[in-house]
Length: 141
Image (tube, rainbow, N blue to C red; front, side):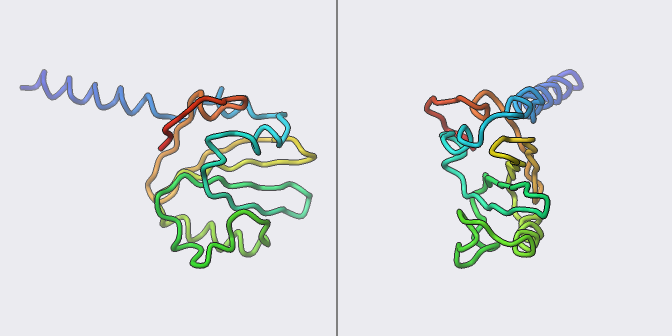
């Protein structure tokens, strides 16, 4: 019995380890032109919230979640740029929604960093489908 339980625990831990944020996937975006992000087939399928901070850095949050409507009842926050105050309010609401927030920091037309951040108990993961240049068919969840 103990051996069976140990095997199940090891299998679960092994599967959990397969779905993690891989540093190579996030670093692959550093220095890439924003057009790579605009054309990416996985991120194109996600709702996006965009804002700009005082130093000119643009922040884009591509949200991988089944239910984010509670944080923007009229959906006006998605797609276009919003004020920092509205972005902060939206982010606060998202803390209660199970989602992976794929946050990109962009300056001068280039990606400075990509920071996948889970909210509401959700864990993010990356793989080859989240890298720049990916153009294959995908089922991403």
